[in-house]
Length: 365
Ligand code: PMV
Image: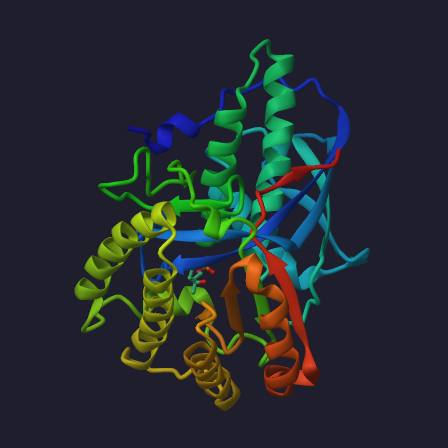
């Protein structure tokens, strides 16, 4: 069993003066949702997600040696322009991971980041953003440890990157490696951990190969409830214990489904998880309704289309109003026809994003 201590790096005698790395990391969409956490970003229940392919953050990390004056030093650029309002989040992230990466104060960093999806799309970029930054930091650590005479394995690289990303934004730990990723201890998932995401190790049925996710942008505004506030709502929530137990059961069930390809069962679990997530928000104190009228219109249209055509499409939701439509690749033409004729009218400015299952972070430099 891994413990936090296993991720504390050696103090390196830093002899790399400067350099840069660049990674992209994708967003992910949870099938069984993470909602509720304990101290130190430990999830209250296990979750499982599909990694996306097109919705990504691309981050370049340039580093130059500085005097270790016991301060973090970094500039932050978003789409080429200074973006100081993102800085507190990064500062907090660096503070959280410092114990595991003691070399961070030896460098001045320039973090240059951009997303492949529109900034104001209501799609959270924290998962892809924190994952891309964590990969870059691990590239630096790998270079430092090589200098020190130790060759880091890819397995450890990815595991620690996921561990670090989790400390930035919980679900970011599922955006490192693999098409399907489990995060959180679960009795039936070998190697699963509360500390990092692990690639789902069973063979995934061909029905899920290149599974599609079309994201309907219903509300592109700022999130009404930040995920920090959201997770906190699960403390003293009247249904918390039942919900956490249900997530364990749903993960067992979806594990079987991913292996046997039963799309009817897949739809039941995924839609129930999405509605349960929103039910938790509606039944907490304070309570929130994050769906918009158009979210409900879309859900009803999806149900009608599925009943009439038997095409196995379903929806899932994040902590917001946008709708992810999930479906197998072989029904893409019919589903896109349905989306463009019947659903686009419910999207803000007619906007939607076509995505599909991806494989994880990619190194450029
Ligand atoms: O990673 P966070 O703290 O932004 O939380 C994400 C929570 C959900 O997106 C609603 C569910 C999930 O498992 O991704």
